[in-house]
Length: 70
Image (cartoon, rainbow, N blue to C red; front, side, top):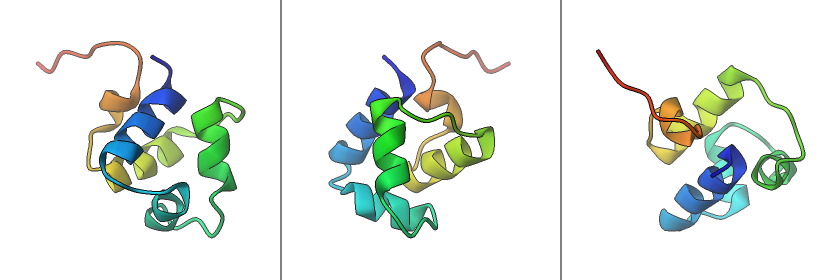
């Protein structure tokens, strides 16, 4: 699963609109979230962290590969 698909899945599970998620990420426009979900934009690790925090998950949970915590 790609990051954008995972963001969308988690956003919908939480009953959030793209605008809601953008607001939680201190973004004034939902278009950045839309582009992330569609995989049409490269974004920074810090923006990934903002999205993860807004969704209540660890950034690793948005990535495609499993992590092991040691």
